[in-house]
Image (cartoon, rainbow, N blue to C red):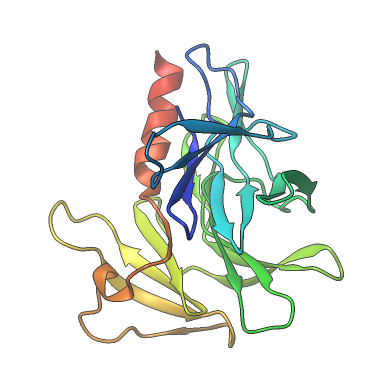
Length: 229
């Protein structure tokens, strides 16, 4: 439970971390080839550190695992771990931690540069009472300086909002509707670092979204329910 999921360009599904029924943090990483004749989960190298509710994405055959949280006693403690796994070489690399720990951030890259720039957006952490607190910022990683920096705020960000990226743009979506498609509220240009008004009546389907984050509200509710058991 509380694991992260990502898909690859060749239709594989990767399951990362989570916790068992004893609320122990897991570091397991497994992969399923959905095109194989026989569906079997393949074990990949364990993460250096386990995590519950991490942000997970596969970009250019690199698995990124960022943030998450742990159960320590009766407390929920977010982490700022930034890990990457080369799916070909099967080697983990530890990058610079996030300045502000959080769970379930969206992960993407700016891919119109010589060296792709890693981006994280949104997510949530917890207050002293274990209540979910949305983290409404967009950050990028400077590969040379090995530092994270905030490039923009996400206006009025809520845990019920959805985030997605495509073609160097980040989309903020209203994910509260019970029926129908999520509507895009605003879009952020990752190259110019400016918010823009979306095209009229643009929806998630119009994006044919290649990198997305599921509704964070469900994960937040799950973590709170787990502690009440």
